[in-house]
Length: 153
Image (cartoon, rainbow, N blue to C red; front, side, top):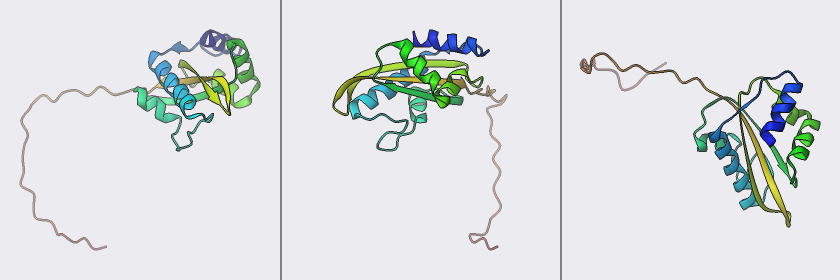
């Protein structure tokens, strides 16, 4: 539901729809569960773990990445509406930099209250160059000339 509502907002702002990505879903779920388990609500964990750690942990190689967080919401439309009222969250939602989205939630406690953590991740995958195998498997070996052990300026 969050993905559909996000794409509705993008359409209203002349942005292309985002494709749901299961790797981003996994990264968002890991981040939500980490916040719930450790009872914090922040882009950076109390130990200093960055938002980008979760992309890497899930194996998502990105050219561009973004994160929106929410807490104490149980209705998808209210979450997206709140994000759209915040300039920085809104920018992530309508940004043309992103092509993919993932969403994860976790139940837990925060400041002594039961709550739901919501993580929305945005990404544009990095283009990974294709490496061709060499034509020959032979390796030429040359004996190096002796080099000085001390280099002076």
